Structure formats: structure tokens, C-alpha cells
Length: 410
Image 1: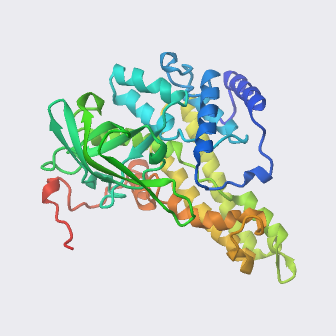
Image 2: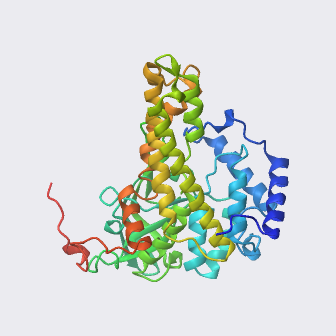
């Protein structure tokens, strides 16, 4: 591994920093506090404006072809921009699902007409996308989904329910997986579609989370019609397309934002245990040291990914490590921060609580980070089977037609 920039990469990084310095302030220590608040119309507007600004300057879809609004750059350049952008105060992005996940999937599996139609509007912040994967009866087991798609002439008629769909309430389009043949094993009977979120028969209900926000939604589909030319991949090849999108998702959401090692250290410096600074307590130092080691491991894992980009290789299943470790670490750090705060840890008012109640809020949203983008159990299976090459776990439903898989009685 070579973690140093090449000459070309160093020049590009300097170009990125000049652009960011001209358009956004650098983060200060106070700006580190990440609020998992509910996105409002103004957030969406500012996010669209920032996305358009980046696209106009050639810093959105950096590795996309120029004919689709990109730069014809490299994945390494895209990784450099993402790393540098984290150092600046910019609007919250509503384009992770679209630019980061949906459009790369369309480029891999869609027709030229679909790519021409959807790539540029997403890249320039004109259209927002969501991901319609999870269902009430099939969360981690995505292939167990029950939403049906039945062919009717040149259309497909969709009936079912999706859940935990982030930002569905202000998305124009969604990526949908549905079951088209229940007589096949569950992975084989799926098909992938592009869904117009304004189509008749779609009902969106927002879900209130324990943190007080409502950025997740459940989506009900009743006789929703999708034209066949909005299908990605062949009929019954939906699992293959979904894997492409999931690979992009785990690279896009691999880092859980929130209090980190330096933040728990800063908190420990302001508190005391038995009349001494909490940071001097051996038990506190031991826990912080463990999280520091994890952070360093994550940093070098990300650098390995950047090295792969620099050599022209795509990211592999090892990206599951980043999300698995960082989400768990976030929850542990948030919980320990509350423990150190003692009775004041119960105060949620950001105007009164230390560090604007950042640790309190993180404790509420951290569990969701361990579910979104793949649960801990799913990610461990991916790491075991695809990274460590261990035998796959036993599956009683393997090669069994989906409509013959027993279900629990109610």
C-alpha cells in the first residue's frame, strides 16, 4: 500500500481545496457536532444548490463520463474530494441514494436511454432518489420480500409495502425490487425497477423515530404501474442488480457520523472522577484507547480502498468492515459519554446540556446506524464469506420455491 498522493493526485487535491475554500467555511471544533435532525424544505433546497454548484465545477460524479455530466475522472479523485469535503461546513446531502447508489446502478444495468434521462438531472441536484428495498416481513433478509410485480402488457402492476425508506417524502424517483415469480427460489424470482414516486397508487407515511425526527417513511403501493422500459436488468435478475446497488450503498454509507474518539476525550477533560480529571482515570483511558485502535484500523482500511482506486480497482466487500465497526463504535462512545455525564446525561435540551446534547442525541440515533445499510449480522456474514472465504451458513430455504417456504402462523 502507498498512502501518499501521486503527483496528479496532489494537484487534484490542491484544486479541490481551492474550490472548497472559495465556496464553504472550514469546520471548527464547534462545527464537529453532527445533529441527526429532521430535514426540512430549506435543507433540501440548500442541498440541491450545493449539488448544482459542485456539478457545474466538475466536482460531482467525478468518475462519471463527461457525456453524462461527469468529469471522466477516477474513483481515486472522487475519494479525494469526499475526504476533503468532510473538512468543510456544507449542507446535508440528500443525494447519497441518487448520485451515490441509484445512478451507478443504472449505468451498470440500464439502457442508454435510461442513463441519458436520469444521470444529469440527479448529478445537478434536480431530482432526488430513494431506495425501496426493506419490507416489514423482510428487513435483513432482503430476498424474502413479498411486494409483487405482475406483467400487464407493456406495464408491470406493483402491489406491496416498503419500510424504512429514507427521504421518500421528497424524492422524485425510487429504486424498487419486487417479486415477479414466486415459484422460483427467493433470490431468483426478483426483478428491479425505477419507480416514479408521483405515480398513482403510492401512499407515503412518515415514521417518527425515537430521536424525534421523521426522515424514514413507509411506502404503500396499490396497483402502481411501471412501464417495462423502466426495468433494470432482465426479468428475474433483480438480485444481481440489487447487489450492485448494495455494494455502492456500503461504500457510500460506510462511515457513521457522530461523536468520535477526540470528542469523548474532549468531554473527559471537562469532567472529574473522584476529584481528578476523568481523562486520568485508568478505566476511562482503557476504553478510549480501544476506540482509538478501532479508528486507526478504519482509517487504514479506507486508505486501502483509496489505494485500490488509485490502481484502477473497484471497492470490494471489505467495505462492510467500515460500517460494521464505526456504527458499533458510535453507539458505545455515545453511551459512555452519557455515563460520564452522570445525572446531566438525562438532559436533552441542547441549550443547557454539555456539547449541545450531542452525546444524548447520538445515543438515540446510533442504533439505527447498525441497521441501515445492512444489519451487523448481515455484514458479518459478508465479511466471513466474501473476505475471509469461510463456508456459508446453512440455509433451510436454499433452492426452495418462494411460495413453498413455510411462514409463521398468526
